[in-house]
Structure formats: structure tokens, C-alpha cells
Image (cartoon, each protein chain N blue to C red):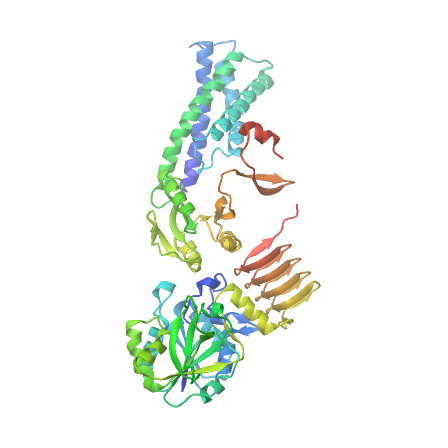
Length: 321
Length: 270
């Protein structure tokens, strides 16, 4: 068994936080999203992370934070969003280059999975592809994702997929977690040649070719972090009504409400923070921040902000009038 | 280097033309002789001394801003006002140096001649300056953020008038399918901002949409020493009745519905 994590996106919707760092490396409740994911993978499974050249350095650094794990990186040559190989294309390239002949745990690096993947793997039948699906409880919400249609009599068997349907027939949505038995890899290689960016279409292709696809459902949280709103939602869910301050952060006076995380080396003085993420080495003085994400090395003084993401190195200091 | 040269040339030619207008007025009123009552040497000395102060008045009122259209009535009034101040400076200077004043008609002639000559020169010089600043490589490569009808109009207008702010690239926060706007390439979404600022030598950024990113665009501009401009339409102001005013020393954008006579309205605006 090998685990392959897709982390080659440029996450333009999360600009400017993703200006110099990949989305899976964004901090979530004190550690990168990708670390949460890798921690769910059984320790004996080697992990390969596929990323692009623009963010390679960040992943190399991240790798050193998990010294006990067998992690390798696959660096795609693309420096820009419009030059990338495509998620399926990158997977196929790796399979061919490394001559992978093993079952494959395929994961997307920007998903938070609340369940241990050992349970997912134990539920798999030999030789049958499995897709983890989450019951989002709302058809309206489901229509924003790829939906999974299961057999009415046998709910663990998938019979169809719909990509962002206008009117969803089900509340089960496809997550970025799947198991591909080695017998299915030729189908992946074939599809990657025709549709290199269509990972979701892979399971539809399995069904078209008469291969079975099982559905694994779970009740633990699942978070697809793709936008400012979903990132803050994930932050609120994981942090809860508490404040997480890095041991090397300094907090003086002020107040914190809701979910607040302050990163390493940051100094927060006389500020009122509510549902905020403050990254590393920021200096905040006399600010009122609500639903804000403050990237590294920002310096804010006397500013009130609501619903903002600030790029690294932003300096906002109110001049005395 | 080119903008500085253009400005310095502009200042020098304005100074010369101001002086030439006064010399012309002298001969027009006094006759084509060198009067001993009002020696030309005294007159020229005083005008020369007044020129730096007159240029400061012109500069402080924004006359030498390269992106401003010289054809506007506002700049005509500015020039007229500055020339009136220039004439007053000449009279005062003459009085201080020689304890006397000179012909009022000479002063009026000098004022009219300088205003007429400088107005014509400014309209002509604008064309020369724009041609010099527009040509490759542009003096002020400008990045447009946001693909909207308003930004398209802006790009076309800047191109048509050869404004020194020459659009060289467009970024769009939402990712437009268009490849170029009036020949200006659309380079992608805002994730390419840093690359664009570095590789296109951007000097000005005009935000035409994506209001939620204004803080980050401003931050990038400050870090790169780039001038940031915001189209009022991003704030929903589309009727062109906005102005930047001061409220207890703080700059505020004021939008006031257009009513009454503009000149009078500005007098009674709160």
C-alpha cells in the first residue's frame, strides 16, 4: 500500500495566504492541514506528496517536521496555475516513473478528515475501489460538490456520480479520500492521458468499465478547505471556543472570543480578537479584529478589521491625527 | 529618468515663456525702445526673481502632474490663478527693489500674454510629453486589477489619449476567460500579482474591482513602492460626483449629488 497526496494546486481563492505557500501547508489549529491528514494515515504506509515547483521549498521544510514518517515529494515542474500537469496527470506520472504496482490510497491535501484512515482501509474489500463519502445533510450544500449516488438496497455500493448538480439527488458528497486497488491503476493511466485534470471522473470511469466502487461513509468531521469562508469554518470547528497561543507568542491585555490562534513569535497587545488566525511573527497593537486571518510578519496598530485576509508583511499603522 | 527630464524641461520652458511674455508685454506697452523710466534690465531682474515663486504656485496646484489632461478647464483656471499670483509677485518685487510701481496696463498685458502663451504651450507640451513617456519601454507601466466594463473603458481611454500611465498587464481576482483587454494581456488571477509587479516593472496599480482585496493590493503596492489608484466604481460611485476632501485633516472621499452651479456649490459645501 502506498499513499499519494495531491497538493499541487495554486489555491487562487485563498490568495493572498497562498501567495508563497501551498494550501495544504496553511495552519489549522496550530499545525498544517497536511500534517492533520498525514497523522490519519497508518504509520507503516509510505506517503508521497505531489506538489508544484513554486511551493516545493515549503514542502521540503514541512517534511522535516515529521521526522518519523516515510515521506517523499514529487515536484511537478509548473510554476503557474495554467502550466500544471493536472491532478490525475501528476498521479499517473508518478505511477509510471516509480513503477507502482501496489494498492493506492489517494488523498487530496486540502481536505481535513476526522476519521482514522485505518478504519477506511479495514472496510475495503480486496480488489474493489473505495471512495469515502460524507453525508452533508443538505441537498443544497451537496450541489456545491461532486455527489455520490448509492444503490438503494445496498448502500455501500456506488452506482453513479454527479459533479456539482443543479439539483442534487442525494446528500452524500465525494471527499478527497479513495482507495485504488492495483488492478485499477491501468484505468487511471488511460484516463490520465485523455483527461489529466479529472480525478473525480476516475470513479465514473470505473463504473463505465464495469468495475465495482464501494462507498465508505463516516460521521466524523470532513472539511474541504477551498475558500476564506471554509478555512475559517474549519478553524472554528477544530479550535472551538478556545484560544490557542504558541508557546513563543506574547499576549498582553485585550480579549479573545470564539476561536483564536496566535502563531509562533507573534505579539498581540491590547487587542480584541474574535475568530481569528494570526500567523507567525506578527505584531498587533490596539486592534479590533473579527473573522480575520493575518499572515506572517504583519504589523497592525490601531486598526479595526472584519472578514479580512491580510497578505504577509502588511503594515497598517494608524497615524495620529 | 525620462519623467524627470520631461518635468525639468517643462519647468525650464515655462520659466522662459513666462519671462518672454513679460518682455513682450514690456515692448508692447513701452514701445520698441529701451526706456530709461522703466529700464528693461530692472524689469527683467524682478520677473526672473518672481519666476521660482510662480513655479512653486503652479507646482503646488498640481499643474505638472504628468497624468493630468492639460485641456481641462480646471487646469486653465489654475494657470490663470497662478499667473495672477505671478503678476502680483512682479509688482511687489518691483516695489520692494525700486520703491515704485509701473504701468497697470503693462501688468495686464503681461498677465494676458503669459496666460495665453502658457496655455497654448501646455497643450502642446502635453502631446510631446505623452509621446515621450508612452513609447517603449513605457515610463509608467501600469497594472489593471479587475476585468469589468469600467476597466475596459479605462484601458481604452488611457490608450486613446496616450496617458503616461500605460496599461501593460491585467489581473482578475475571479479569473476571466478573456486573454487580453484592448491588446493588454490578462495574465491571470491575483496569485500572479507578485510575479507581475516584479517582472513588468510596474509603477502604478489601478484597482477596478475585487474590493475585498484592496488592503492586500495596497500592502503589495507599499512593499514595492508602487502608486495605488482606486476607481470610484469599485465603491459603487459611478456618477462622477465624488471628490477627495479633508475632514479635520483626514482625507475623505465625498460624494455629493450634482445640483446647482458647480463653482457656487463648492463654496457652500460642508
